[in-house]
View 1 (cartoon, rainbow, N blue to C red):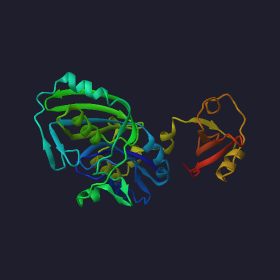
View 2: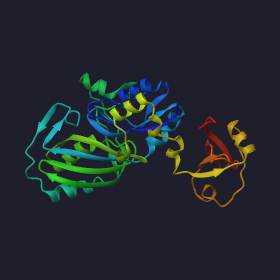
View 3: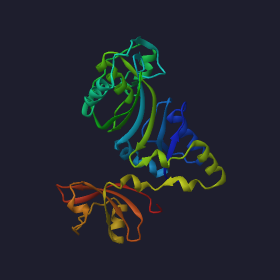
View 4: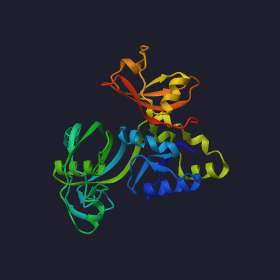
Length: 301
């Protein structure tokens, strides 16, 4: 069993519990998710099965979109509504114009400090474990990219925003930092992941739907093939002999045919057999002028 499920994670469930459920329903041991959602967050959680787990890295790197509700005037230790309130301030002086102006400073490439209540590790321990023990450690800020940030609704003190961002972005930190910029504090009250890469919430499957699909044997209807995650790469078709060489891990010198695989600046491409079977991913080695097999999948895909 292999492929990818686009699951709509419900409120209150951990991402790990969804993986465990899929492992139990499918009987497939190799199951993993592509990007943790907090228990209080909902929405798109891609879950990869079997050889699908080998493309998780490409999903983690993909852009993501969220809808978030942020409450101004309330600061918590977790940066969201699940935490302990550590500061409250009247936010009535904040206008829509001020809010819009502050949001504009978070667009583009910004520096962001991850929250203490996160899965990032410090000397081998997740930060959230240290935070629960009352230990606060200095965290390095890092660059994240915000492609789109829009104010969708403003019902004081709740601001509803939509964000499209790159990997590693913490929406909780964004809410906290917005509150600091406005001078009144803020925290995240709800979060929905609308999209992860090409997986959209409009096409996602709910937990009850998925359980029924496995119970009655039509789960295949919800499985996406592995190579859908790689559609941003150029694709080439190779001969049977070259296909066998790739399966054996041998690098190849492939002649240019004018296709995007050769004319683009990308250093990876998808490769298929003449009958349309997905073989894997090749990476170009410019020093040797060869395409090196990077990921090779079973031929029955």
